[in-house]
Image 1 (cartoon, one colour):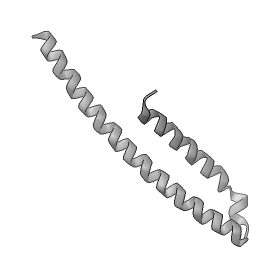
Image 2: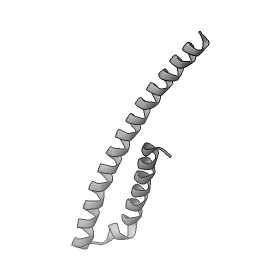
Image 3: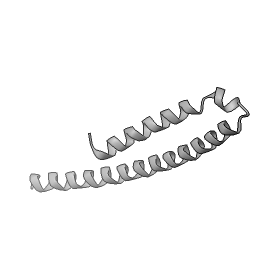
Image 4: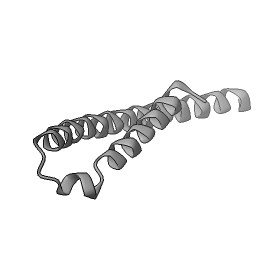
Length: 79
């Protein structure tokens, strides 16, 4: 598995853990500690989602460059 795939999997796992931590039961409590934790988790989720978007963009850029390199190699080998 590539580093990008590893990072994407860790990111997906982190999002899953964050979603579980922010369960409906905890969100309904009016406890200041729970509110603080919810706010922290919301901020972490936003950061993770932004990182995920950046990783997707990087992955797409790399895939495009690899496709171009493969096409060039094929044309050289066919000539």
